[in-house]
Every structure is written in C-alpha cells, then in structure tokens.
Image (cartoon, rainbow, N blue to C red):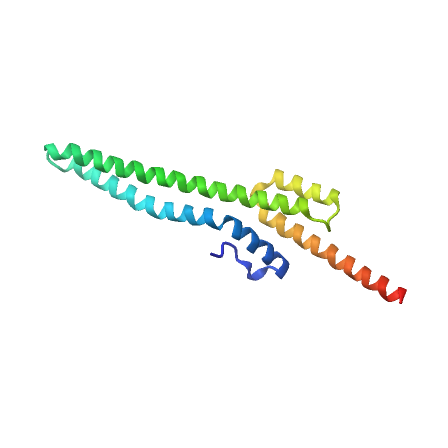
Length: 157
C-alpha cells in the first residue's frame, strides 16, 4: 500500500516515509476493511428497516425481521466507528513516529530539533510538510558535514 505520493520526494524522504508506512500499514488495512464492511451492512439495514416499517403489513415475522435488521445496522455502525478509531490511531502512530525520528536525529542541533517539535505540536495537521522540511534540513547538514570532512582530509594530506 502506498499512502503518499512519493514520486516528488527525494530518496532520503521516500525512505523515511516507507519506514513510517510499514509501522502504520496494519492499522490502515484494518480501518479500510472495517469501513468497506460497515457501509453495506448499514445501508442494507436502513433500506430494509424502512421497507418493513412503512410498506409491509404487520405480521408476527416483522418483529423478528426488525430485530435482525436493527442488529445488522448496529453492527455496521460499530464497524464504522471502529474504522474511524483505527484511522485516528494510525494518524497518532505516524505523529509519534515523526516525533521519535526528529528526537533521535544525531545530525540536527538540539535547538533546531526543539523548534521542529514545537511546530509539530502546534500544527499536527501539517505533520508531513514539517517532517519533509526537517528531513531536508537534516540532509543539508549531513552533506555539509561530509563536505567539511572531505576538505579537512584533503588539507591534512
């Protein structure tokens, strides 16, 4: 499953997004399955309950059908709610992954990390843009450090 359009991102960002996807993939998969099951169940229940209540004549079997379709509708709504909870859990998991990844970075200075973590806390809806910005900054610092080490090695020879 590819949750992000990764074609526009550099390799180092794609790698991190793939790692994040691997951690949230089971949650997203469950949410999709629950959602796909819940919508038809609820739709069938509502349609049949409407038909039984307004168009059918009253018989002894109606009570059984009302209970059956009410249970099917309740099951559909419960699965839909579970789907929403799994989506929220996946979002929180991705946010936790981003926070942990930023905190564990050894390349970026502590002040810069804290600034990104504050931005992330203030704007959680903007998490992927902040994460890609952080990764780009980390890559710039890494390349600058490598370049500086190469220059130091060449001057010491």
